[in-house]
Length: 551
Ligand SMILES: Nc1ncnc2c1ncn2[C@@H]1O[C@H](COP(=O)(O)OP(=O)(O)OP(=O)(O)O)[C@@H](O)[C@H]1O
Image 1 (spheres, rainbow, N blue to C red):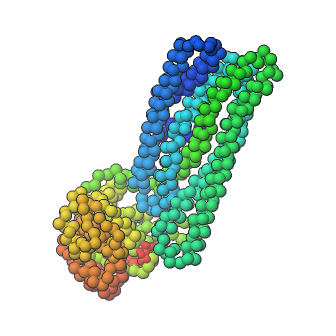
Image 2 (tube, rainbow, N blue to C red):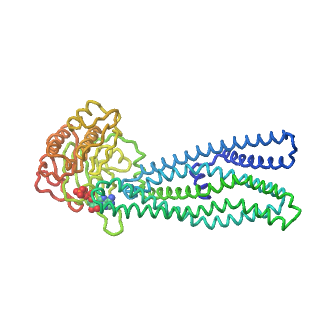
Image 3 (cartoon, helix red, strand yellow):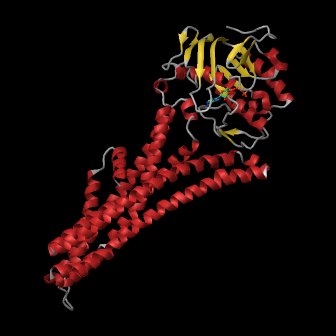
């Protein structure tokens, strides 16, 4: 519970005092209403209306309803605010995380933290408020017991102490099982992503599907169910402990109290009635315990995600995010002694590229060729500054690219990587020109397949080649000075391939665009001003082309 309230305090900035007061008043009003009822029951006369007591009882009830409603509503608002802030903060941190940092985090923890976990925290709010106001009411009931009999108070406190002892003993097991079940839930989310992404491959092969189902789905689901059951059984013990409190307390008062002091016997029915009134708040309290334990596990998972993102954050990326985008004038992009190395991972030497010295001239078409795994895509990510070089400099003419102008530098590029993502909306394009869109769609032979209306792509159910052509349409609409194509033509039929190399690229060049394309289509190398070849992360001389290796 402590972790839960610490989290709320830390995330909400402060806990509104009025809400705390209202919660306390609700508990007190509830307790006083109970006391009034018991007190009135003592002096009931047939046919008499105890108007004063009735008025007091109704007023206390009204006060309870008003205060409880206020505290529940304010707490719900506060907690939804906390969840909102949390989500925005995590997404904000993601903005200041480099591509490499983001790539290093499993997707599962993103999905479970930002959806299921935040929802667990939201739904815990009202139960937590109930627990607080109930515990205040219980304190109040204990005070009332104290007024009636000190010995009864000692017995009640003894029983409460014993139950707290059992609860704490049980809590460790529960929270460890809940944390483990969160990890298993993250794995499940990851594997679910794998199932959806690889559905066709799995459908094609029964053995593959069975294997994946057994290991990645059923295995994880079984683990998760086992851990959740373990936690659930522990939580049931806690609920039982809280619920049995009532019976133990009644038994204690009924059987123990007369052993200590027989003069207190007359108050026993009153004490038992008081305890019975407490059954509601005790029930609230019992139900709040599992809700808060689950919320604490959710908080731990969210914190784990934040730590992972924090590790992937870079100071330079943070600086870069804060800088405005400004137009940069340039004639060349120059790479001087550039190195890049992936972070060290267990079980192998990390791939690296460089050292490399290279120059790209404005308005030229450059092809990058090389075998699989030679580092072409990695190079494009370094060139576009998605990966920060581990050494060397990128320069626009003589101006060095630093975190202070990196955002403006990135803004020079539009990219279609091999694993590009087609957004359903033309994000970042304010006023798309309808006629231009129509012309482009017609030229790409997509006009009868899809359209773009009010910036939204109406149909994305296209073939692989068509989707890539649509990506090209969006790339052209972005209208950036440098266009990056990573094996764009690989999925195109011969007609479109020819259109791309012999018509589109010269047109883009005529418009002053700089094109840098990774390609294996040696038939069309004539379309390039320069061809650079990569081998094992380095550029080597490409003999067959007049441009050769530029520096
Ligand atoms: N995120 C990453 N973390 C660590 N290593 C990576 C990562 N991405 C790629 N690599 C490694 O970098 C090497 C080069 O990959 P890259 O994708 O740049 O090659 P490529 O020349 O584009 O290959 P292809 O022609 O097959 O697309 C590969 O050996 C790969 O294992």
